[in-house]
Image 1 (cartoon, rainbow, N blue to C red):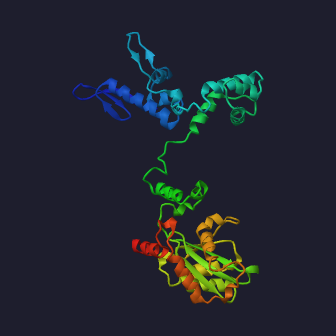
Image 2 (cartoon, rainbow, N blue to C red; image 1 turned 90 degrees about the vertical axis):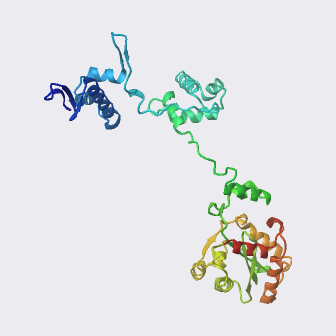
Image 3 (cartoon, helix red, strand yellow; image 1 turned 135 degrees about the horizontal axis):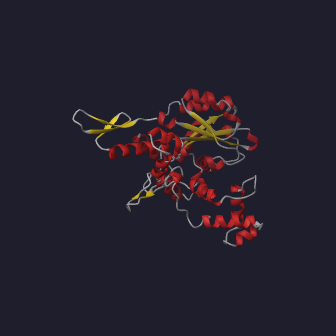
Length: 355
């Protein structure tokens, strides 16, 4: 029990002590005791009786401190704390499209009367599915009843906190969305792009093979995503994992590090040695999801352009490497609408200069 008493100093002046601290007046000492009483209840979690004994007052005085009281003098003493609501969140305003407390009370009352879900939903004009979810979420499995007040508190707690919009006007994400719309991309294509690339100017590559009939010969294609700059891989001896690995390393090892950030391939077995490629070029290698060519749309579009030079059914092994380089150079000098009618060769220089 905390000590509080009255003492006198040498000059005869009265002093009031509480918790080892002297107060010049009894009123100040009582205010300190009352503040300690409230602190014990709110922070320490003690009960009413323990808090009253700790500060040296009766339970009746503690109750008056908590709830306030009307004095005979006409002065009303305000409560020190709203004890019964101190641990509850303040009520939050919920939009009218959500169920309100009055509607939850109506649902609980009609359930007690044995009404069905559809009959209850007609009264507040709500969808039966909304009422069914409300009942399933808040029904007490023991007694089959719904507590409307508790359900309202839980619903308010589930409300999203106000946060700044990620795609607010002027942000990098906003600019990326507008750029996608200008390219006539669908909302799904814009939304499903890897988040780590949104708002960044990182150079990332896409890779694939174009093959002839029965996959007897192939040409590898490497396309930088942001500039559409294209590199073709010569594979005269086959397109198994060993040959593809060596061709990629030979072509990319002399590129600037900026152009070797990552490489995204499809699920083909020709990149089975991707770990060796990543280790040799210090580059991350990723694979798109199965049956998701839209994740490498730039590469698929480039493959379509290459079919103008290498029609389907052509034996691709007969083309020498210098011819493939000439085709790649011609593609890189072709203005592209998606680049604002700039050439990939111009955009790649712009990208390197910006770095």
